[in-house]
Length: 141
Image (cartoon, rainbow, N blue to C red):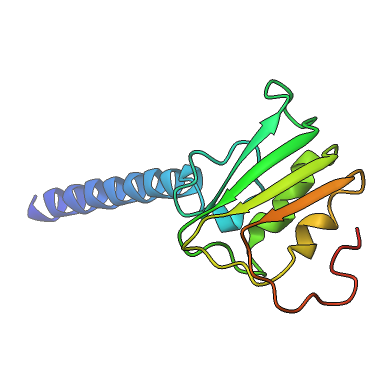
C-alpha cells in the first residue's frame, strides 16, 4: 500500500515538473529578444529603450515607404558596428536623411552601413558631429 502511494506521488511530481518545463519553454520562446537580435523599422524605435537613436520619418503613415528620416543620436550614441545601421533597410525608399548628434554624444564616423541600405538616397546630412577622418568610399551606397 505504501509503495502504491509513493509511486502515485512520484508520478504526480513528474507530471507537474513536465508541465512546468513545457510552460517555461513556451514563455521563453515568446519572450521578446533584445533589439540587437532582431530586425526593426527605424521609423518605429520608440519602444527600444536600449538604443541611443530615434528617427522621425515622413510620411508617417507609410509602413516601409518613408522618403525622409530625421534621426537623433543621444547619450553615448551608437557604435559603428551597431545593428541599428542595418535596420535602415526597412526604409529603402528614403531620399533624404538627417542625422542629428546631441551635444554630449560623439559620432566620429560616417554610418556607411546605413548608407549601403539606401540606394535612393539623394540628400544626407550629419549635424553637430566631429568626424576627423572620412574613410574612402564612406558615402558610397
